[in-house]
Amino acid sequence: MERRSRILAGLVVGAAVLLLADKVFLGPYLEKWRDLSARAEKADQEIQKYRTILAREAAVRDGWAKVKGLLEKPRVPDVQTHFVAHLGEIANAVGVNFDIKGVREQVQGDFKEYSFETQFKLKWEQLGELLVALHNSREFLKPARIAVGSQYEKEDRLDVDLKISTIEILPVKAR
Amino acid sequence: MASTLTAVELGSRVLAAVTARGNGSGMELLRSGSVPIEAVDPPNIRRALERCGVAEARAVVLLVPRGQAFLRDLELPEGTPEELVRMVRFQVERELPLPLEQVRYSFIETGRGGGKVRIQVSAVPRDVLEPALAALEGAGVKVSGAYVSSYGLLCLWPDGEPAVLVEVAAGEAEILVVEKGRVEFSRTAPLPEGPVPERVADEVDRTLLAFKARSGREVLKVVLAGEGDRAAALARGLRERLAREVVQVGPGDLDTAGTAGICAGLFLCRTLPDLLHPPGVSKRFRITPAHRIAAGTAAGLLAVVLAFHLALSAKAGALERRQRERDALRPRAEEIALMSQRTTLAHQWYRDRKDWLRVFDALARSIQRDKLWLSSASFEENGACRLVGKAKDERYVNDFITALKAAEPFRELALKIENRKHNAKDALGYTEDFTVTASPAAAPVRRKK
Image (cartoon, rainbow over all chains, first blue to last red; front, side, top):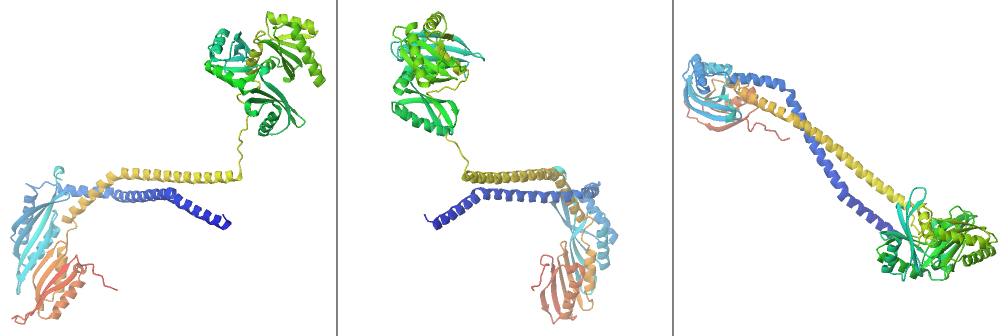
């Protein structure tokens, strides 16, 4: 075999050996390395996330303690009745008659939500007062939908549909 | 070396056997005997070994009588062991009367000086050695080595003082002239009438004359191999006949002294030419540049593999530590996250509920009351709303929309006018009916650049 052929054969064999080494040795190692790196990065991200969460631990526990304290306040005889009574107080204060058309219950996370559909007529001023009263209520209360209807030149008679919700914490066995 | 050793000298008519035990400084003869045999075959050998009291031996060294062997002294140029092996082979091929493939030979170095090496070769024809080996093996005895009987005799006189060593056994006399522990001259002579002092003395005389003629040196001392009465009587007779100093050496008697001598030599770890294990050419490994390159490459690859392994191990270890840390943090973090989620959800009903007053306030500010009025408005919790109304002119509707878009609660919503209708017959002049929807879902409207 002449010199040129020998050199070319050597190059081919060298390239084949390199390719084989890459496939057999380097490839699996690099794959494993990448896998470990990815897992380490994911673990780092999770650790960072957990640390961030835990950095607020005291504040979160404090906040939850307050919320839990409020949620666990005695409400007589039960949440629904208690809340209807509270709405009644607000309506009386504003001077409107609530007409509760229906109540719906659903579970949201660790809570049970009660939604009340109400319908009533009132004046503009009373609507404002009602909204203020609802906003300032210390109960767990949330207006979920308001529809207001009026007639021209009869703005003192507004037809209001109000959907209003409250929650109670679910007992552990019900979650 | 085993603590006990059995040597068997196997002649054509006599078998002599010795079992000895090494005791550190020398050896102790345990059993010995010499018996005639009818033929060299396994049954005869077995019987002879039993009669010699060494039947329990499982491994022996074999002594081939001097008369059946060739001894040659060679003087060769100094060289490496491999070169010596090759030179000896070449010389043996020339010196022996038999073709090389018909003999088994071994050699030892007996001296060195002046750029020369003195070699003593012992060789035995295969047709002598191999039947003896086969007969012993057939008798259930393993042969671990084979020596010419002269070396047994030589081992009895290890001091190096020049002497004539004489062994009289199995109907022949073996006579060696030794000096400095090496055989200078040797011969055997048949003694058909037995160990008669006159006859033995004559053979010793002949040997001394032959040695003097060849080397020009005189040897004064005669050493008779063997102890006991028979040996003592022979020694006295030799002394009278030769008028020289005759000493006896043991252990063993006249018949077994040479056999015992090989045991003594092996216990003292003397180098003896073993016919079964001759010095060979050991292929010596030489490190060449190619070996170095290959070794370097292999070491490099090994280092790379090792480095990768170490790096991977370190990384896996670090990952494990992180995962342990993560697993330790996770339960508390999940508890806190859940607590936070519950608190947030609860606050939607309590602290962060939607501020409807601001919505109504913005709406009131956006309406020109004498030009536009709303017949109904509905608002959802997510911010979506639907406003239905009338206006005196189309431009008031547009003004209303523009004002709404500028108002803060509606700024993030997508406002859309639907069901726009012109009603020229309206008695109060509110000719433009419209419906406006505001939707948070469509809010992120981006203008194309």
